[in-house]
Image 1 (cartoon, rainbow, N blue to C red):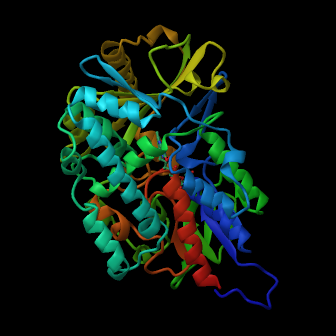
Image 2 (tube, rainbow, N blue to C red; image 1 turned 135 degrees about the vertical axis):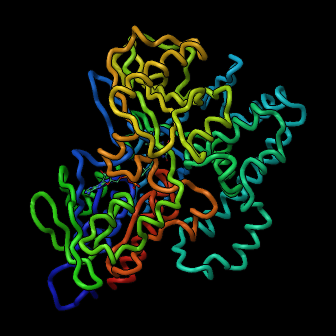
Image 3 (tube, protein in one colour; image 1 turned 45 degrees about the vertical axis):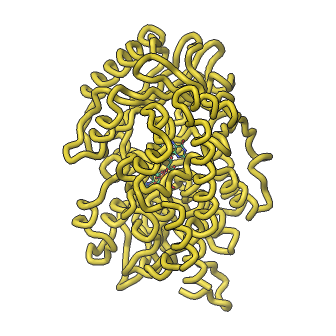
Length: 500
Ligand SMILES: Cc1cc2nc3c(=O)[nH]c(=O)nc-3n(C[C@H](O)[C@H](O)[C@H](O)COP(=O)(O)OP(=O)(O)OC[C@H]3O[C@@H](n4cnc5c(N)ncnc54)[C@H](O)[C@@H]3O)c2cc1C
């Protein structure tokens, strides 16, 4: 496996899937001098960050919040590029609007003083507490960047780095989010405003470690950015960069088997034949990847392991092209349902079910970007977090879609029914069909509970096959576009350690 000085051939790195982690890793490894081939089952790059174009509407099928800008800056700097020039990054203000079940609403803006005034108007003393809470969030974020995120962790000794642990305990990272937030705020509304970002990590306030209060730093201090033209512009920038580095992409090319010889991967089977590999990296979901192994004894994690794990939620998604404008929506709008806890229970409880009073998110980029919808129209993505593994099917999806439209009308006073020009519904089984997603989870793998994060997240290298690695949200550091980019830097270290 060592890079031979005498051979003319560069080691061949094959990557399964063209999601964010793959796009980022492929370019880094091509830059490092390897021959890199990406095999993607679908027709486009991006994976869970795909693009849907219909009748002049451009729908980002996945991400809409551009967070952690320094991760993108660090990544593109490897290639002498700056995301600020590659992307037209905009800062919508208000950042988002929240509707509560009592029919009131608030706007979170880009001005901390104003947000503190808002908190104070809801609970006496909460303005001051918001500043204290955000200072703590910032410290956690800085410590995570410095100690956790860009680090391959192989054993408990990596985690027991004294400085890291000292910081961990002093920052209250191991308790749960609901307890942590409860130390600052009493009002249910304020707790909800602070805690909803956990949905981005696939967690609930009761099962997510307080470390992830760092999300509030990204949201309130740094602010949510938006690449004009839609989030898919990020995918295009990553893809274009990979092409420039010499990466070869094959779309509509599912990998159907991973071929091994003793403790090495030798290649993969595709619909166009066998492709030999010196190194294989999988960006596909972990369970699916190991199901493809021609020898099940070489799995790192068997099905019994996965049956004890908590997947990140799936999502019930509606992509709607709407005739006319919707003035009560902002670029990002949230609705917090009557029974907030019940919705989390429907996702993470012992017996998951379809939520009856859901909280939901509406992405309406056409509110601030006229390039993503025909003139005078809105493009909406409605997202209801639901449990992974629920069964749906076309009849149920139609029924639930009608329920959600009625629910939005009743609770947010927005009637959409007669104004729908185009509609696509995407739900649990679609995640499985389109991305080979484990139990149809939407975000990419395990929820970020304490025992499913950091050292305890599935490893980015196989325990038994020395040239098999993993990249993306399934592995470290975890869920979301910036973590998937960081995971590419981590896998690059692994591959270079093996091949150099
Ligand atoms: C609705 C929604 C909203 C989100 N919002 C945000 C947000 O606002 N901000 C944010 O940062 N993140 C968000 N996320 C999460 C983010 O999109 C994901 O965490 C991230 O895109 C995962 O990237 P990945 O590298 O793990 O690859 P994935 O996207 O999981 O891609 C894996 C790829 O592998 C391919 N594949 C699978 N099996 C095979 C096979 N056998 N052969 C070939 N190819 C195969 C799949 O088709 C896919 O293209 C959101 C996700 C969703 C669904």
